[in-house]
Length: 398
Image 1: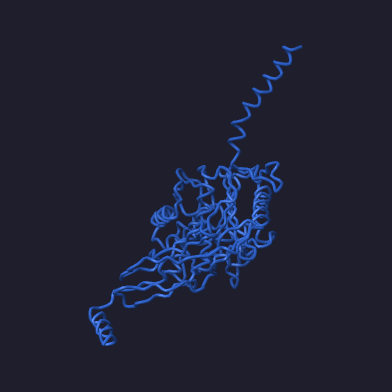
Image 2: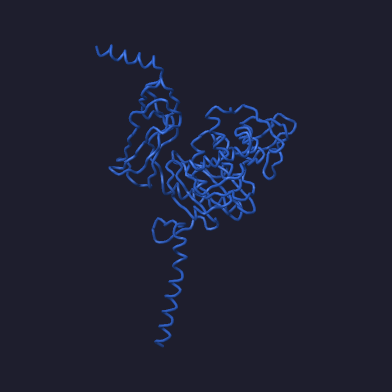
């Protein structure tokens, strides 16, 4: 009897030890319940996932977020990042016409059925990419901005590096299956965060339906491939994806009050499961967290003094919202911020150049830091201008 008891105890201990690696492997993919007594798996069907605060980049939940995966059409998020940057830089305009090459028109898969030689505006092409996941429109825009798809892909990879997307490599602009074309859930969240800095993008990604060629004999009805923009309150983007290798993927965003999150799931078995698991991620974020705004987009932050520049001072305004993440119920009265600009900044400076940082404290503890960039180019002042300034100062002193 004693021998049987010992054998039973040994069997139990062996099973317990064998189960430990499994528990450890899944440790990062579970979130404790409010009672703290059990763990809840929010994305059991996804091969990898991440939930991120769009303002701070804080990861609220993750599952295998650094595993390299085929991203399918989620690739087009980076395509849209570069389109929005080209618009901001004045390289293209929304009403500018884009001609479709034979190569662009030859793309298979999701498309808006562009004909060789057909011209649509940048705005129409952007709708076709954001809503209908147009592979043809993506290539047409890449050729417009980069001169060729290959050159545009190089731009995508350079941008990925600047964003810290260290586990990403692009081969094409639309996510059609290709060797050595991969990214991760975390990297997708990072480029989604970057795209959302261009607040006008949600005008396209959040629209449920629209038309292209509306006044023509063959209007094309656009229906957003991301059904959450219709069915989840606050959802307004971003991009779906599917190939037989990648399975069903989605990078989605939703906003409640001032709080915006990005949820990424990869490798889902079907669209229903994909949408259900993203919904769980959204529900978790909005029930557990909120944010404390520091500056809204357009708010004045401070003034940069420029030495030897045509302009001696440059007003700094918030390019996007700056906020910090807080757990619901936490006190936020002692949150403060400091603008720390680089000393002795000399012209010339370029728009987008780093000029300092915005540091946020809770009491005496630093809880967030945001890079501050120059909002404009400032050329070096001429020698004559500098001499006049010097003379003016001397005259004032005397």
